[in-house]
Image (cartoon, rainbow, N blue to C red; front, top):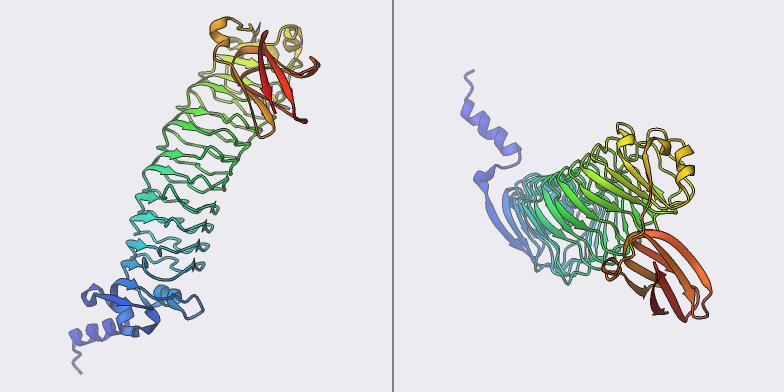
Length: 431
C-alpha cells in the first residue's frame, strides 16, 4: 500500500508540542481556565488573577503545559509566593515580569531558564530562594530597586548567569551574602555592597572573571568565606572591611591582577589556606598581631610581593609552603622593635630580609588618624605604619594596647569617656 508521507508528518506534529506556527497571545485571570490546546500553543502569556500554587495549579500548568511560552507577564497578578521549581528549565522563556506584590521566590523557581534575557526584582520581594535563577545563562541585566525590601538572597541564587554584566547593587537590608550567589557570573563587571553587610559566603563571586576596579567591602564584614573571590582575574583592588575577623581558604586565590597594598585590620585572627595564592601582582601585605598562624600556601605564587609588615611581637607560626615559589631573601619583613632576633631564628621567617618596622609619627601622617565609637567599639582609622595604639579610661588606666596599621579597634565594656593615644597623639571618645 502506498503511504502518504505528508499526512504522516502532519499526524506526528499533532501528537507533539505545537510549533511557533500556532503562536498566540493568551490573556486570562488564570492559566488553569485556558484550554489545553491554547496552553500548548501560547507564546505570550499574561495572567491577572489570584494565582494558584497547588499540585495542578497555575504554576504547574505554566511549567508542564505551556511548552512554547516565550513571554510571561504576571505584573498585575495576585501572588505572594512563587513555589519552588515553578518554571524550572523553561528553555524558551525569554521575557519575565514578576508580580508587583510578590514576596517570595522559591528554590530553583526559574532554574535553567536559559533564554531569559533580563530580570527586575519587584520592590516588595523580600526573599529569593536558593538557586532561584541559577544557570539562567542569557540574563544580561539584573535590577534590584534601591527601596527594595529584599533581606535574603539564597545560596547560588544567580550562579552560572554567565551573560550577566554591568554593576549589581545589593540592597541595604541584606546582612549576609550567601554561598555562591554570583559564582560563575563571568561577565559581571562590578558589585555595590551595603555598608552594613556582615558576612560574604563561600564562592560568592568565584570565577567572576570580569569583576574589576576597586571593590569596597564596607565596614562591618567579619567573615569572608572560602573561595569568595577566587579566580576573579580582573580584580585589581580591594578595601578590606575594618571588622574582618576571618578570611577563608582560597578567598582571593588566582586574582593575579590584585595589586598594591593589602592591609588586614587588627581584628583579623584567621587567614585561610591559599587565601592569596597566585596573586602575582600583590606588592605588600600588612599582617596584624592577633593572626594565629600563616597556613599552607597562603601567599604561594605571590611573586610580586616586596614587603610584609607584621605586628606580632612573637613570630606567628608559618607553614613551610606559606610562601612557596617566592625568593624570600628579596622580600623585606618589617617586625616590631625588639623582635628581630626571634624572627631571625623562626622557621620560614628567617628566610626573609628582616628589618625593624619604623613608626611614622610625624604630624602629616597623624593628621589622617581619627577615633570614633560605633556598635560598642572604638574604631581608630588612618593609622600610619607601626602605630602604637593605646586605650585608657578617664582615670588614666591603660586598658588595652596594640601595634597596628590602617585600622584598629577595641571593645568597650562600660559607658563613659575614654582616651585613645596613637604615637603620642590623644583622642577623647565617649561611649
